[in-house]
Amino acid sequence: QLQLQESGPGLVKPSETLSLTCTVSGGSITSDDYYWAWIRQPPGKGPEWIGHIFYIGTTYYNPSLTSRLTISVDTSKNQFSLKLSSVTAADTAVYYCAKRRAGFNSWYFDLWGRGTLVSVSS
Amino acid sequence: QSALTQPASMSGSPGQSITISCTGTSSDIGDYNFVSWYQQHPGKAPKLMIYEVSHRPSGVSNRFSGSKSGNTASLTISGLQAEDEADYYCSSYTRSNTLCLFGTGTKVTVL
Image (cartoon, rainbow over all chains, first blue to last red; front, side):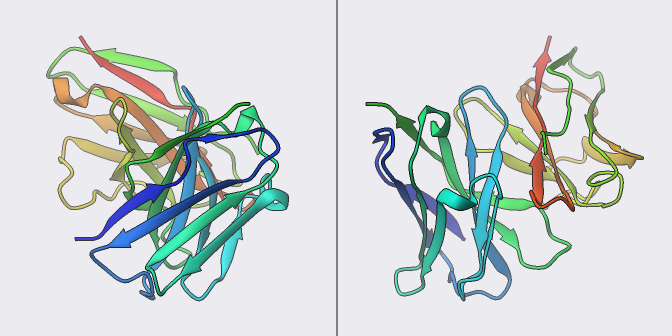
């Protein structure tokens, strides 16, 4: 059974880079059937799609974050990662990794990790 | 592009039905059947309840149903149960370069 688990620092200083990794277990990240996504949810607010990646490296980013965002994949470790640079307090959120089916018709996320809270503070 | 609009809160007694609305535009809900709904209990990750407007994933109760009319999508919970108390979020594809929007969220309280 496929599972996702986020990992990374829970506290990041302003202007620094937020780095998170999602480990995929119970299946291969190299499946042609899935995209691997990052979604965040600020405290008390709704989720926000950050972006997603296909295992060959094709990426799709939320344009509001593009200038600061890198999503990458490491197929040897069955992991994908998020890097968000120049963070501010507005980037404080629970960050989730998630899975969606590949293809234009499948804009929904059917598996989520448990999420990890990242706070931006000095 | 801003989030999809949902009522902040709704409530109902056990056994009743409630319908949560999600209002978008012709660039998202109005033109595409790519609406999904998520249930989120406190401190937990969102759980997919409805996809492609009205399809239920395996394991989701048939008390949950989805529909769409024009620029507004709806989630109906029939036979309300205590375990349905949670936050609910809609989501839609958008042809704007944002690609994916979520709703503002609705807190459902079972009285």
